[in-house]
Amino acid sequence: MPELNSLESLRELRKTYTATQLPVIMATSKDEDQDIVNCFDTGASDFASKPINFPVLYARIKTALKLKQLMAGTQTGS
Image (cartoon, rainbow, N blue to C red; front, side, top):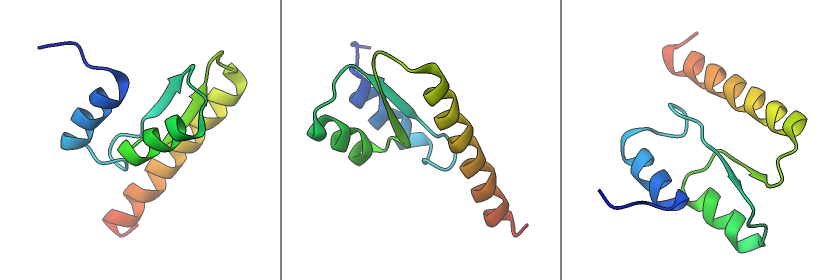
């Protein structure tokens, strides 16, 4: 299989998993507005710019996981 860039990899993931099933936080050195919009349009749950600010990334991961748990509870009727 040929190498995929990050957006192509995300497209492939989204063929199998929804954003609710598998949150994805993109980390990239690209910080142009259109690059960020492309990440979200492709199915990213969130975005982190490099260099990574690890406390901020940790907070984003915690939030993504909380949202996943909330959505799972909503879907099962909890």
